[in-house]
Length: 313
Image 1: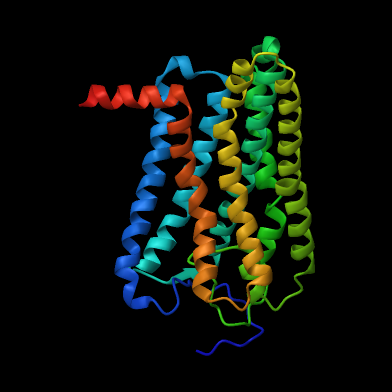
Image 2: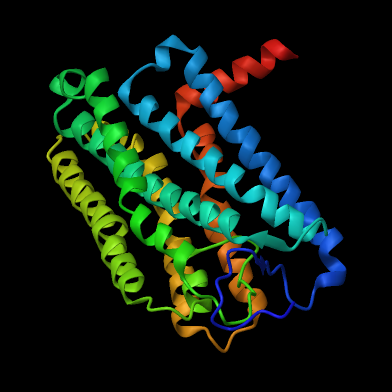
C-alpha cells in the first residue's frame, strides 16, 4: 500500500544510515565499533565496580564519578543495538516509537552528562577553595539531591518536544542521517509545524549545555585564583593535579559536540561519511575516554584496578 504524504508515520519505519558508499566494508568497519562498544561497557562497569567495592572511595568525588560512569554506560546501551545492527546487516530499520525512545535517552543522557560534569566542577571548587568544610558541604544527602536534580533536569525538560514527535507528519524520505535517532534529524523529516520544537530545543541547549560550560569555566577561574594564592609551588601543583582528570573529561565531552554542530551548520558540502563519523564520535568518544582518563589520571582508581587484576592473576 502506498503511503500518502500527509499520513501519520506511526505504522512506518525509518531507515538508519551507516557509512554511505562503504556498505561492502561494513564487516570490517564493525570490528573496531564492536571493540569500542565492548570497551565502553566493560570500562564503565569496571569503574562502577571499583567504586562500589572499595569503602575508601565512598566520598563525594567518587560518587560523582560513579554518576558519570553510569551515564556513559547507559549512553552505550541506548545506541549499541542500532549502530552494530546496521553494521552487522541485522536491520537498518527502526520504528517510530523505538526511534522516539532512543532520541529521548540520547539527548537526556547527553544533558545528564553535562550536569554531572558541572557537579564535579563544584566538587573540585569546594575541595580546593574550601577544604575544611568539604565534607560538611557535600554530605551524602546533598549529593543525592544533586543527583536527583540532574536527573530531573535532564529528562523532564526534554519530554515535551520529544512527545510532540509522535504526532508529527513525516512526508519526506524516511532516511536518517545516522545509525541512531536524534531530535534534529527527525525534525528534518517532518512536514508539520516544528517551530515549537526548534525554539524549545535551542532554549534548552542554551540553558543546559551552554550554561553548564560557562559555570564550569567560572569555577575553574575561581579555582585558579585560589591556587595562585598558595605560597608553595608544590602545593599549587598538587591542587591542580586533582583537576586534570575532570578537565580532560570536560574537553572530551564538549569538543565532539562543538565539532558535530560545526559540521551540521557549515559542512553541508562535506561527504556524508564525515557527518556519520562525527555523529558516532559525539555518541561514543566520551563514554570510551572517561574510564581511561580516570583509570590513568586518578591514583586511587588506578591503584585499585592494578591491585584487583593482580589478585585475579
